[in-house]
Length: 453
Image: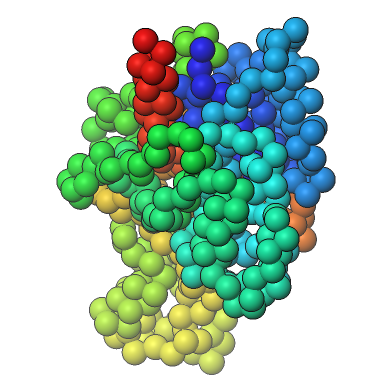
């Protein structure tokens, strides 16, 4: 029988994919959002994990999720009829990370900062053998004021979160490994995404270890070219697309097996590959970026080398419209020299300052939830949901449901496809971690067998 796992704060299912690939059976999972529920449950239906039969998903705020409800949901599964409650081998989870993120303002009293307390509450009640918690790098140097632990311990203001967590685990009977930062690109993911991993384990079981890199050298890493070159839409591309990379073949074939151990029933269709429609002005603006260039690097190059705006007729017209104190020839001449003010740069590029063009021969930077932050290396456009999913290491058979994107105040309540992808734990990173937990479980079983013979 497969070891049993629970995935809390599961999102669209990146962590779950890795857990399943490592050989676990997910009995219970939970997230707060309706959009991710649709995607998550659809995927589990594909995999033969059927609601109420051999798994249960609960959409709820974890603060309103009593452990008794998790136990009841698992006990009521058809596979456990007339059977005792099973031993939970591992609980995985990634409490929402915005409160710990180094990107943007962090607040000690951000309510999201204490969601890991709810995670600890459930761990204390269910007593899994192993616990995995994933978060952003900012977790390591975050501090909290007025935190009160699961057992009522009051911590002094300005306490480091990792120290709180290790102490809390100790109080409920768990040993912990020192938190470790893992880079997804070290585990076959074509993306440099660094995450803090925190592992706890009962005093009575074998300690696990963190995974070691499967691609320690830069030349071994999976590149953007390896990941998405077969998704190019423009057939005039000069790339040789006759042969798929190993990574592309695995994405097509699928790394996650069904509950019965078979490949997912997949017809080869490329889902979630709808492109944004860019007008000529935007396309020209995107074409200014060379591969591997950020907006800041592009600005530096323009000021250093200049550009010939005659090659960009739509951009020239836009600059004429905005820079009314100058003639077209003056604008052309000034841009050629690069001796231009911020007014000229704003007319050319707009004020968006964090765009980056992917480099085909390198891994991607961390994929975030806003696709406009990135450009594909091959075409003058932003990536599709599928391209971002490939860079996150999702199988092609994994379908993201709901709106493709959203904006404005709706971002507070809606989790569109791009956000589902950007928020996910890369499945291959999750698999590497889950495999180490699996090894420890197997060592426990071996030790138990030896002790009874």
